[in-house]
Length: 198
Image (tube, rainbow, N blue to C red; front, top):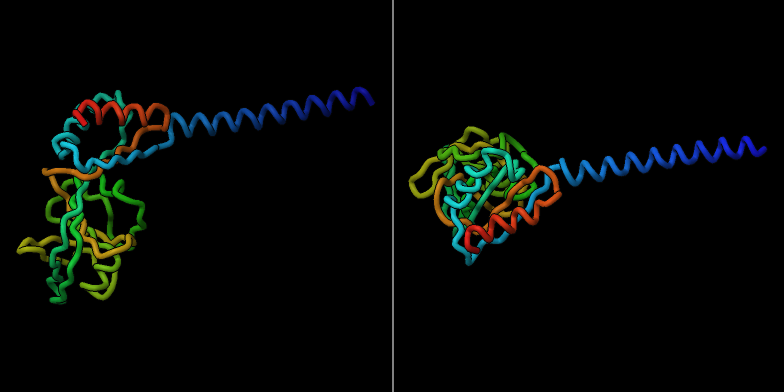
């Protein structure tokens, strides 16, 4: 009986150490490798696209562990019209520099989300797409806003009537940075904001 107890104890110890090892591996992955996004409200600060471009330039050597960056601002409502249907509707304009996917979690209903800096493209929310076109399968359709025409690249399931457009300049109200891992990400972000004099 004593030998069987020792074997059971050893098996339990090995199993327990294996479970601990797996848990430690998962925690290490979460801390060091799983992408981690931090968003900062920059309203009232001197923050613009040029600041983000400096961060991108600095990251070329990979030292900060940044994967993607986005900055955005919300402009007042403007009239947006569908070129094909002639319907128009007021929508908030979300001006985005960088990876549009970082602006908010949303499922893509048609087309694609990330525009980077493709100036003649836009992304519509589901509600706006339905107001202008009567549906969400509208990739490739044209919309017009203040005499500027844009091709719809995608439709996302975000709430509200919003037209998302890429920008290459101007102030930013929000910034999001996706880091390679959680470890040290908050400190890096704080340091980057402070370097900018904010």
